[in-house]
Figure 1: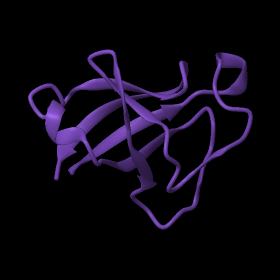
Figure 2: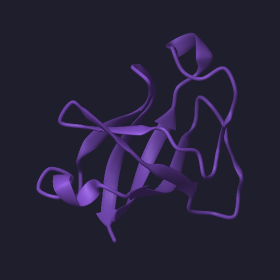
Figure 3: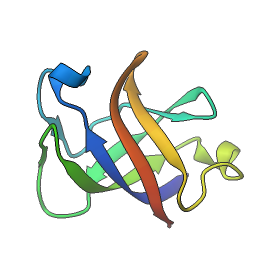
Figure 4: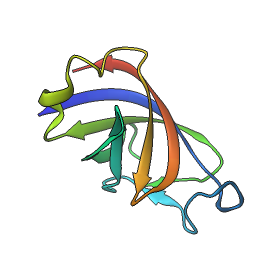
Length: 96
């Protein structure tokens, strides 16, 4: 499993994002090199809700991320998707 710290911007509904707020523990897909892989997104603070239209510092767990460790490095920019819909943009801050 690959674990990383990232900052994400959760898109507003008007920007094509989700219709409801995000939450710690949600499981969108992480887009790496046009491959969507399963991930778990958790807030790094003791909050449960991720507000749309805001930036959040998160921990992302990628159970199959080891296959992409040559691509996912500090500074890597990515999107979080539900299906083909992009719900967030992010940047890797550090690797764990």
